[in-house]
Image (cartoon, rainbow, N blue to C red; front, side, top):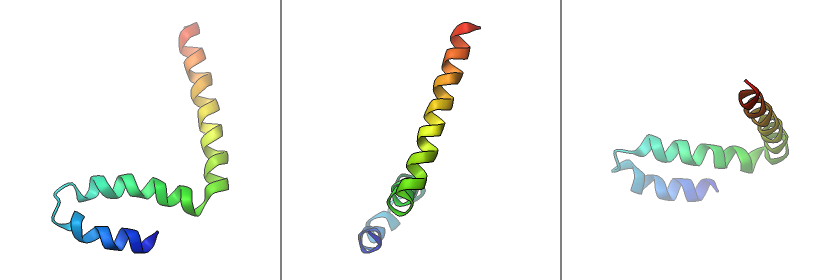
Length: 59
C-alpha cells in the first residue's frame, strides 16, 4: 500500500490537485489500517443519518 502511494506521488507532485488526491487516498488508508473500528463507526454513522432523515420527514 505504502509503496503504491510513494510510486504515484511523483505523478501527483506535478498535479495542482495533489491535496484532492490525498483526501481521496486518506480514507482508503484508514479503512485499510483500522477496518473493524472504521466499519463499526461507519455503521453507527449510517444509523444516525437514517434517524436524522426520518426526523426531517416528520418535521
